[in-house]
Image 1 (tube, rainbow, N blue to C red):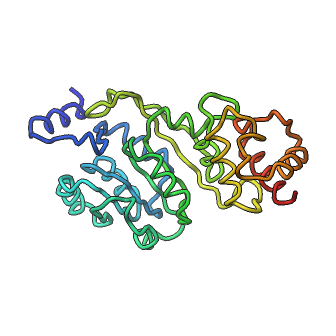
Image 2: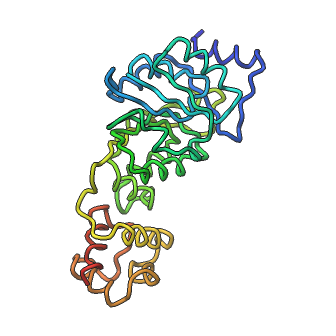
Image 3: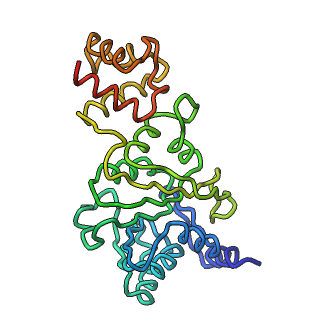
Length: 278
Protein backbone atom coordinates (compact mmCIF):
# COMPACT_ATOMS: atom_id res chain seq x y z
CA UNK A 1 0.00 0.00 0.00
CA UNK A 2 1.27 3.46 -0.88
CA UNK A 3 2.45 5.69 1.97
CA UNK A 4 0.00 8.38 0.83
CA UNK A 5 -2.97 6.09 1.47
CA UNK A 6 -1.53 4.81 4.74
CA UNK A 7 -1.17 8.38 6.02
CA UNK A 8 -4.64 9.30 4.83
CA UNK A 9 -6.12 6.27 6.61
CA UNK A 10 -4.20 7.12 9.79
CA UNK A 11 -5.63 10.64 9.80
CA UNK A 12 -9.17 9.30 9.42
CA UNK A 13 -8.70 6.75 12.21
CA UNK A 14 -7.13 9.42 14.39
CA UNK A 15 -10.31 11.46 14.11
CA UNK A 16 -8.85 14.26 12.01
CA UNK A 17 -11.69 16.28 10.47
CA UNK A 18 -11.33 17.91 7.07
CA UNK A 19 -12.90 21.34 6.89
CA UNK A 20 -14.83 21.63 3.67
CA UNK A 21 -15.58 25.31 4.28
CA UNK A 22 -11.81 25.92 4.09
CA UNK A 23 -11.48 23.85 0.93
CA UNK A 24 -9.10 21.38 2.58
CA UNK A 25 -7.82 18.70 0.19
CA UNK A 26 -4.43 17.36 1.26
CA UNK A 27 -1.78 15.70 -0.89
CA UNK A 28 0.29 12.90 0.68
CA UNK A 29 2.07 11.45 -2.35
CA UNK A 30 5.70 12.20 -1.44
CA UNK A 31 7.11 11.28 -4.85
CA UNK A 32 4.69 13.69 -6.52
CA UNK A 33 5.38 16.46 -4.00
CA UNK A 34 9.12 16.08 -4.46
CA UNK A 35 8.75 16.19 -8.24
CA UNK A 36 6.57 19.31 -8.13
CA UNK A 37 8.99 21.15 -5.84
CA UNK A 38 11.85 20.23 -8.16
CA UNK A 39 9.88 21.68 -11.09
CA UNK A 40 9.76 25.12 -9.45
CA UNK A 41 13.52 25.59 -9.84
CA UNK A 42 13.89 26.33 -6.15
CA UNK A 43 17.48 26.39 -4.81
CA UNK A 44 19.16 26.74 -1.41
CA UNK A 45 19.62 30.46 -2.13
CA UNK A 46 15.86 31.08 -2.55
CA UNK A 47 13.12 32.06 -0.11
CA UNK A 48 9.49 30.94 -0.20
CA UNK A 49 6.08 32.13 0.93
CA UNK A 50 3.79 29.11 1.30
CA UNK A 51 0.04 29.69 1.52
CA UNK A 52 -2.11 27.07 3.26
CA UNK A 53 0.53 24.50 4.28
CA UNK A 54 -2.01 22.22 5.99
CA UNK A 55 -0.16 19.49 7.89
CA UNK A 56 3.14 20.41 6.28
CA UNK A 57 3.62 17.68 3.68
CA UNK A 58 4.61 20.14 0.95
CA UNK A 59 6.25 22.39 3.55
CA UNK A 60 8.91 19.84 4.46
CA UNK A 61 10.04 19.51 0.83
CA UNK A 62 10.22 23.30 0.54
CA UNK A 63 12.22 23.60 3.76
CA UNK A 64 14.70 20.98 2.56
CA UNK A 65 15.33 22.93 -0.63
CA UNK A 66 15.02 26.60 0.27
CA UNK A 67 17.00 29.05 2.33
CA UNK A 68 13.91 30.23 4.20
CA UNK A 69 10.17 29.39 4.22
CA UNK A 70 7.32 31.38 5.71
CA UNK A 71 4.14 29.27 5.85
CA UNK A 72 0.79 30.97 6.54
CA UNK A 73 -2.05 28.74 7.77
CA UNK A 74 -5.55 29.90 8.75
CA UNK A 75 -6.73 26.66 10.42
CA UNK A 76 -5.68 26.78 14.07
CA UNK A 77 -6.08 23.01 14.46
CA UNK A 78 -3.27 22.44 11.96
CA UNK A 79 -0.72 24.63 13.73
CA UNK A 80 0.54 21.79 16.01
CA UNK A 81 1.44 19.71 12.92
CA UNK A 82 3.39 22.66 11.54
CA UNK A 83 5.13 23.39 14.85
CA UNK A 84 6.57 19.89 14.70
CA UNK A 85 7.98 20.69 11.28
CA UNK A 86 9.57 23.85 12.72
CA UNK A 87 11.51 21.73 15.22
CA UNK A 88 13.03 19.77 12.37
CA UNK A 89 13.59 22.71 10.01
CA UNK A 90 14.99 25.88 11.65
CA UNK A 91 14.60 27.76 8.35
CA UNK A 92 10.78 27.42 8.62
CA UNK A 93 8.54 30.07 10.18
CA UNK A 94 4.84 29.36 10.72
CA UNK A 95 2.33 32.22 10.80
CA UNK A 96 -1.22 31.58 11.99
CA UNK A 97 -3.74 33.69 10.11
CA UNK A 98 -5.66 34.33 6.93
CA UNK A 99 -3.23 35.32 4.16
CA UNK A 100 -5.82 37.75 2.80
CA UNK A 101 -5.74 39.72 6.05
CA UNK A 102 -1.96 39.90 6.41
CA UNK A 103 0.20 42.94 5.77
CA UNK A 104 2.08 41.34 2.89
CA UNK A 105 4.86 43.91 2.79
CA UNK A 106 5.72 43.24 6.43
CA UNK A 107 5.15 39.49 6.18
CA UNK A 108 7.46 39.08 3.19
CA UNK A 109 10.12 41.65 4.11
CA UNK A 110 12.55 38.99 5.33
CA UNK A 111 12.20 36.99 2.08
CA UNK A 112 14.10 39.60 0.10
CA UNK A 113 14.00 40.07 -3.67
CA UNK A 114 12.76 37.52 -6.20
CA UNK A 115 11.18 35.10 -3.75
CA UNK A 116 8.82 32.27 -4.65
CA UNK A 117 5.17 31.75 -3.77
CA UNK A 118 4.39 28.02 -3.67
CA UNK A 119 1.07 26.65 -2.49
CA UNK A 120 -1.80 24.21 -2.69
CA UNK A 121 -4.50 26.90 -2.78
CA UNK A 122 -8.06 26.19 -1.56
CA UNK A 123 -10.33 26.37 -4.60
CA UNK A 124 -12.75 28.79 -2.95
CA UNK A 125 -10.18 31.59 -2.62
CA UNK A 126 -8.08 31.05 -5.74
CA UNK A 127 -9.20 34.24 -7.49
CA UNK A 128 -8.80 36.33 -4.34
CA UNK A 129 -5.25 34.99 -3.82
CA UNK A 130 -4.23 35.76 -7.40
CA UNK A 131 -5.71 39.27 -7.23
CA UNK A 132 -3.86 39.90 -3.98
CA UNK A 133 -0.51 38.66 -5.28
CA UNK A 134 -0.73 40.30 -8.72
CA UNK A 135 -1.50 43.69 -7.24
CA UNK A 136 0.80 43.46 -4.22
CA UNK A 137 3.84 45.04 -5.84
CA UNK A 138 5.98 42.41 -4.10
CA UNK A 139 9.23 41.26 -5.77
CA UNK A 140 7.91 37.77 -6.58
CA UNK A 141 9.91 35.77 -9.12
CA UNK A 142 7.51 32.90 -9.61
CA UNK A 143 4.14 31.70 -8.33
CA UNK A 144 3.86 27.90 -8.43
CA UNK A 145 0.50 26.64 -7.26
CA UNK A 146 -1.88 23.70 -7.23
CA UNK A 147 -5.26 24.91 -8.42
CA UNK A 148 -8.44 23.60 -9.99
CA UNK A 149 -7.68 22.45 -13.54
CA UNK A 150 -10.51 24.57 -14.91
CA UNK A 151 -8.88 27.67 -13.44
CA UNK A 152 -5.50 26.68 -14.89
CA UNK A 153 -7.16 26.38 -18.29
CA UNK A 154 -8.48 29.93 -17.92
CA UNK A 155 -5.10 31.34 -16.91
CA UNK A 156 -3.46 29.92 -20.03
CA UNK A 157 -6.34 30.38 -22.48
CA UNK A 158 -5.86 32.03 -25.86
CA UNK A 159 -8.20 34.68 -27.34
CA UNK A 160 -11.44 33.51 -28.96
CA UNK A 161 -11.52 30.28 -26.96
CA UNK A 162 -14.21 29.21 -24.49
CA UNK A 163 -11.93 29.53 -21.45
CA UNK A 164 -10.57 32.97 -22.37
CA UNK A 165 -11.80 35.79 -20.17
CA UNK A 166 -10.85 38.53 -17.74
CA UNK A 167 -8.76 36.14 -15.61
CA UNK A 168 -6.80 35.08 -18.71
CA UNK A 169 -5.91 38.63 -19.72
CA UNK A 170 -5.02 39.73 -16.20
CA UNK A 171 -2.85 36.66 -15.62
CA UNK A 172 -1.00 37.16 -18.90
CA UNK A 173 -0.60 40.87 -18.13
CA UNK A 174 1.21 40.14 -14.85
CA UNK A 175 2.90 36.84 -15.74
CA UNK A 176 3.71 34.11 -18.24
CA UNK A 177 1.73 30.98 -17.23
CA UNK A 178 3.09 27.46 -17.72
CA UNK A 179 1.32 24.18 -16.99
CA UNK A 180 3.54 21.70 -15.16
CA UNK A 181 1.27 18.74 -14.47
CA UNK A 182 -2.37 17.72 -14.19
CA UNK A 183 -3.05 15.98 -10.86
CA UNK A 184 -6.05 13.60 -10.68
CA UNK A 185 -8.60 14.16 -7.93
CA UNK A 186 -8.08 10.70 -6.42
CA UNK A 187 -4.57 11.62 -5.29
CA UNK A 188 -6.00 14.05 -2.71
CA UNK A 189 -7.50 13.34 0.70
CA UNK A 190 -10.40 13.90 0.73
CA UNK A 191 -10.65 13.87 -3.09
CA UNK A 192 -12.22 16.99 -4.63
CA UNK A 193 -14.87 16.66 -7.33
CA UNK A 194 -12.53 17.78 -10.11
CA UNK A 195 -8.93 17.32 -11.18
CA UNK A 196 -6.23 19.83 -10.25
CA UNK A 197 -3.22 21.27 -12.04
CA UNK A 198 0.16 22.47 -10.86
CA UNK A 199 1.03 25.65 -12.71
CA UNK A 200 3.92 28.13 -12.74
CA UNK A 201 3.33 31.85 -13.21
CA UNK A 202 6.62 33.46 -14.23
CA UNK A 203 6.12 37.01 -13.01
CA UNK A 204 6.83 39.88 -15.38
CA UNK A 205 9.00 42.78 -14.24
CA UNK A 206 6.89 45.02 -16.48
CA UNK A 207 3.86 44.59 -18.79
CA UNK A 208 4.33 42.92 -22.21
CA UNK A 209 4.29 46.40 -23.80
CA UNK A 210 4.31 49.84 -22.13
CA UNK A 211 0.98 50.96 -20.64
CA UNK A 212 -0.02 54.63 -20.52
CA UNK A 213 -2.90 54.32 -18.03
CA UNK A 214 -3.17 51.01 -16.16
CA UNK A 215 -6.34 52.00 -14.29
CA UNK A 216 -8.07 52.78 -17.58
CA UNK A 217 -6.92 49.45 -19.04
CA UNK A 218 -8.32 47.51 -16.08
CA UNK A 219 -11.65 49.38 -16.25
CA UNK A 220 -11.92 48.59 -19.95
CA UNK A 221 -11.13 44.92 -19.35
CA UNK A 222 -13.66 44.56 -16.53
CA UNK A 223 -16.42 46.26 -18.50
CA UNK A 224 -15.76 44.32 -21.68
CA UNK A 225 -15.64 40.85 -20.10
CA UNK A 226 -18.69 41.49 -17.93
CA UNK A 227 -20.51 41.88 -21.26
CA UNK A 228 -18.31 39.51 -23.27
CA UNK A 229 -20.91 38.73 -25.96
CA UNK A 230 -21.31 42.39 -26.81
CA UNK A 231 -19.06 44.29 -29.20
CA UNK A 232 -16.44 46.61 -27.75
CA UNK A 233 -18.49 49.55 -29.00
CA UNK A 234 -21.40 48.52 -26.79
CA UNK A 235 -19.51 46.98 -23.86
CA UNK A 236 -17.30 50.04 -23.27
CA UNK A 237 -20.00 52.72 -23.53
CA UNK A 238 -19.77 53.59 -19.83
CA UNK A 239 -15.97 53.67 -19.78
CA UNK A 240 -14.84 55.42 -22.98
CA UNK A 241 -16.51 58.18 -24.99
CA UNK A 242 -17.90 56.68 -28.22
CA UNK A 243 -15.92 58.99 -30.51
CA UNK A 244 -12.67 58.25 -28.66
CA UNK A 245 -13.31 54.53 -28.77
CA UNK A 246 -14.14 54.58 -32.47
CA UNK A 247 -10.97 56.50 -33.22
CA UNK A 248 -8.86 54.21 -31.03
CA UNK A 249 -10.27 51.07 -32.61
CA UNK A 250 -9.53 52.39 -36.08
CA UNK A 251 -5.96 53.22 -35.02
CA UNK A 252 -5.55 49.62 -33.80
CA UNK A 253 -7.02 48.12 -36.95
CA UNK A 254 -10.06 46.74 -35.13
CA UNK A 255 -13.42 46.32 -36.86
CA UNK A 256 -16.51 48.00 -35.32
CA UNK A 257 -17.86 44.50 -34.62
CA UNK A 258 -14.79 43.37 -32.63
CA UNK A 259 -15.35 41.83 -29.19
CA UNK A 260 -13.05 41.91 -26.20
CA UNK A 261 -12.63 38.14 -26.16
CA UNK A 262 -10.85 38.40 -29.54
CA UNK A 263 -8.00 40.57 -28.19
CA UNK A 264 -4.82 39.26 -26.59
CA UNK A 265 -3.16 41.20 -23.77
CA UNK A 266 -0.84 43.13 -26.11
CA UNK A 267 -3.80 44.23 -28.24
CA UNK A 268 -5.74 45.28 -25.16
CA UNK A 269 -2.83 47.47 -24.07
CA UNK A 270 -2.57 48.93 -27.57
CA UNK A 271 -6.27 49.79 -27.51
CA UNK A 272 -6.17 51.44 -24.09
CA UNK A 273 -3.09 53.44 -25.13
CA UNK A 274 -4.90 54.55 -28.29
CA UNK A 275 -7.83 55.72 -26.17
CA UNK A 276 -5.41 57.87 -24.17
CA UNK A 277 -4.12 59.41 -27.41
CA UNK A 278 -7.54 59.92 -29.01
